[in-house]
Length: 514
Image 1 (tube, one colour):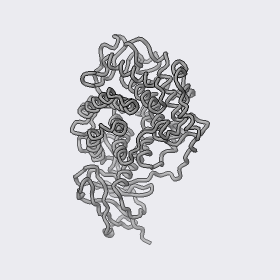
Image 2: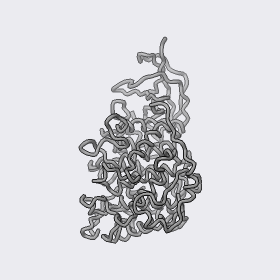
Image 3: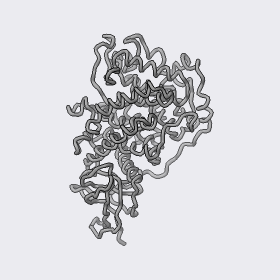
Image 4: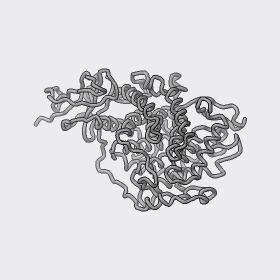
């Protein structure tokens, strides 16, 4: 009996308002072309108007055709009718699967929750995996695909450390406030997006975010050098201990603003406001231009500022400011959001496409820096929900950038690996988790305006249980304010951990330049 395979090769694209018609072909089991299938499918291509390969599949197999390598993977697939929304979801699904091929933590002998590393064991530092899990939480929230939820749950609980504050012993010798902060923000994302709660005998998402914040708000993290602010690294023996970094303070500001919105506890707002004021006062945030610089050494009282600009510093403060605006409706915060967004789009999206300006053209971006574009897409997408007055400015740029991101994903054996230089219009020869993560973020975040799924709070459907005393040093500031009683009450009904059937991801259409 002849098995038929539906292969989406193909065709020159006929663009009609950002969509394309694709004529599939039927192939027999040995891959020989048999006959054209009469039907056509219309799929969105995110604004790409050049001849394109479009990949359609179902279940857990991706069917691709590459001019050099031919058909890469084949299996029987029912004929599809791809709706525009479904096509974007399926593209994101392919990207998520490709990204997860870099994760080895669930293999025998490997460490759960982390990407291979740190150097020389592998290229990735601990924090990047924390960011990856947040990207997958957003992916789940925006697409509804729960294929990776069990891995996200397992990873994020494995790395919490003995005090449930994301300070595991294997990383404490080199731990940065920003490293810990990224894991804390991932836990906060889980709480805000109503990601399934952990089992009742495990720490809960909101409590984990509170624990990270509480440890960073404790007196031993703050000192009088440079008038305050968090240092980059936590252990005093490390060189980074003598550097105060915008990203460390950005994580703290961002997490404080989000905890304030979620819980209503004004202590978080005070910390967020104080952090913003310190950033302006020390000169890391230029109050005239709204540029945010990297940081400075404490030896000269932070007077010799490293004025390198990285996109994620802009994004993390812009998102935090949007949370503050959403909670307070204060025009001061609205103005700050507007100025940061305007500066960020002008500086980090030249021509409407994300570029890491400090290192990309020079070819000096590190493995860490390759991830920043994805953060900008995710965070700016959230800003459109939290501060809707920004949507008309942000959305067209993110759409253009997402199209460019996908267009260059033509590398690797399957002809779909993503590189880093989106603005070049072609694959740059690089591969990695960061490259895939960033394009996944760019594509999946396009769905936020379709789903309209904004972050929840304790009073608007939140299900995660909080613990005001989570982490070390919490009692020296939070016990003087109201406890998170609403979150605790709502979170008392623990959602059972979802066990997922099936090992494969559900793949869909991925649009790539030929």
